[in-house]
Image (cartoon, rainbow, N blue to C red):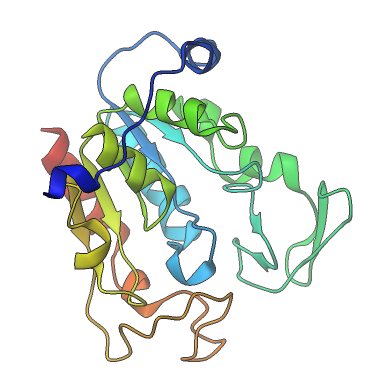
Length: 231
């Protein structure tokens, strides 16, 4: 049965206490956004997500939480600048990066400079939850989760939390979400879909550094679907 294929997440009192120490008092509806997956072909472009979806939902009155690693939403992920998509060189201490377009960047401060998180009341939880227990406790507080084919959707599906799944074309999305009844998949068809490319680069060429099936999903479409699910 499908129900037997959904992960079971056990309660972790210490993780709950840790997460709640970061969270404000619950008011209104809360939305968690994770745009980066462990591989670039499954990631949603940050320029459209963190810089448009998150702030727009926050201005509409929803409480938004950015979720991911410490370097997500900070302008850099692995070898690319997510502000301009140029290749970057990250220092050994991981605190600074050199981008041929944006110049020398303080990775830790970029998110505050480029995304008005404080002005909009957005909570940047990137890097703060480091265990499965902590992440699951964070997602339990959410009314909606938005993210790619990555950890966020598995947590949302296992916890039966409404979620918008932003799926690339590298795998049939029906297989990735069929056991999660709370996930609403979003995907655009492209000629090169189901390429099964899981590396850093796609076979369709370096000029298409993000999957075309993902870049075809506009931020406004995601926002409209979010408002529909949030009621």
